[in-house]
Length: 524
Image (cartoon, rainbow, N blue to C red; front, side, top):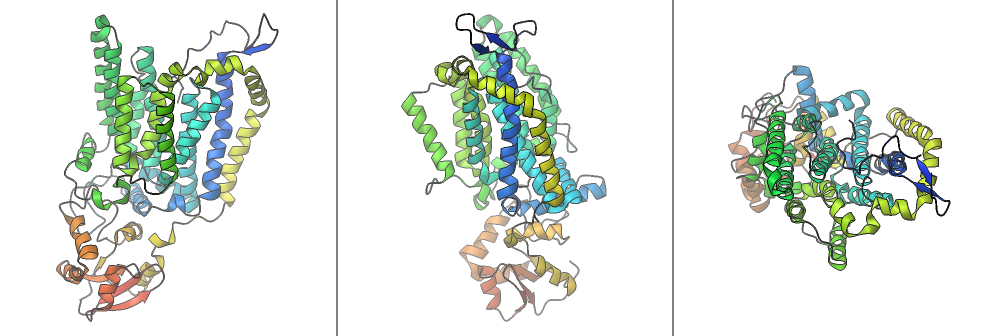
């Protein structure tokens, strides 16, 4: 991918002065923009390595594999690989079997399955960690085209820390570097008063096949197109409208190049329409700002600085920032979108208002910094890149054992089901659904709730398991459930333990199995 879509100051002419010019008055060395760009490209490498090291050293054993959805994403990727086609209907649950369902994240699921096939869970961890590290290193590179390099590093690191709770092995991760490239390319077009680069079209096509959030890319494009229109002179607005309308029209067509055509675009409407499942899914909950966590510190810190320093943001950038902040407060899963896009939107307004933040100011005030970095670049670029590459290979081959969190992996209980040839419909809680799909057992419920388990299914399940647990056993009877896989000490487990119609047949610290005594066995 070229860096043409990254907003930057104009490259110095290649026929111009040497990369480090002598100041005619003081006789000192003065770095050029070319030196700044070389320094930022060099700093990209250790920053990527640092972000990667944090992930593989401190989060590989559990946090990256802490989402039960990772299991079913792998299973769907395996199914697509083996069948040679994407699913059109639900084949993984019995409660909604045969209902229309699309694997809109099919390409990301294939990526995860490929990593698992090659390197097991360690391969999944490594692929996720490399993608995350690359995303935030790219954010630094975008910001470094305008901002003081040390400030750009600080913002990228803050965004990285701010988004840490969302570093999970799931399709959303693969959209992160595309978010950076897309937003940077559009902002550059607005600020340079040109048509957005055609290189953005394959990005939106790739994004549409990796994750459903591509619809927000189109919304960002429309908002920045509106800014470009109002920022143009009156006599140029018609031409600006034609350029941006044409670009966005082609972008929409490119987003339709999926196995499902245009239909993935409707998923966003389905999620934010009359969707009764969102209040019961953790990542779709609003931010409460309880306690003092890193997200709260960053949010309040940014608010403090904006009020204390009196930062002024242009109208359209402010509208987009408030919109992103509103999404982040309304749904936790949008925190990373806010962390990526907001710095790119605000980089130019802030550097225009505060000269200290500008790259040009650092070039003028701290030439020794660039001289040292460029000397390091000449000597260390290849050794450092080779060291990181060797570290990745070493981790893939000899790294610590990686495995999903134990509390979402009822492996022993499922082994018992297969060993005893237990049959019949199985009840499972939400967190166990992904693992059951991974093991080839049709689920009662799983992580596809935002698109499949609709029409009151999740609210009713919450009612009979949390609000009125005395209704749980009649609910199982209504659905002809004969096996119950539950978490110890859960309301479901207590109801089953107190029933004479159910018998506990297996238990460990992760899960308990109950079998209905009067049920007739059927195939799973």
